[in-house]
Length: 346
Image (cartoon, rainbow, N blue to C red; front, top):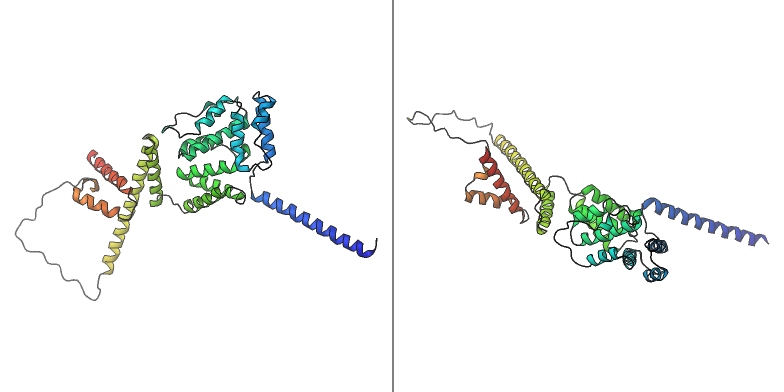
């Protein structure tokens, strides 16, 4: 081999080595950035095959249940294919699939036994929980959805993106800010491969919830929306009453802070209006021959907001709620009524 060919071979090998190293480094960097990834289609198909065998399915049933799995199967299709495959040989799972094809009742009293039965193969149980929770989340049953999937991790399901998405959606609605942002961040680690709708909604959730501050009007409005959602489902239990009390307490705190600010502004304005170049006139007593006695009147210990005459109370209500969402009026009215009740109890 002449020297030119030897030199060319060395250059070629160096380029191959460099490209291979760059590819490995890129994959390593990607794995560092992403804490999860979609499982391989063949891996999930094999997993389904094992579960079907464990459930007592014969070879013909297994072939039928896995017939729709191809090399072109998308990661986003695997959860439905996985659950439907099991449903083809198991009556309990078939009933679950049928349940999730219709709208839920207004009250979810219990979850299907198969989701909690420890005799159910673990992989099967985890993915059935995700399938069921996705259905609940689609119909705004966020508490029930979270109850089913909150403890699941991305490594336990065949569709980790759907798990993270519905965890984030649920956390957002029940105002668990830190948990929501953590789920969104993890979901967006694979922004390039997750469904576009997941990516866009996750970014909107992130932008919407990140600036949320405790005891702000924004937080109060969200609490009120959550109360409205629960009442639409016919719920008026401890959770709803607690949120209603929280809203009133937060409004009470805001009003107190506004009153303090007004007092400080009035005090500053009064001090600033004094004119040092014009000395104050001597005070002189007003005329009159009365003895100076006045009737003693009890003023009570309350602030009197709840006891305002109807016209004045309505005027105050309109002024307070002028720049707030329309549904604030109901809460503020309830706030006045609560003050009135508290005043009557004194």
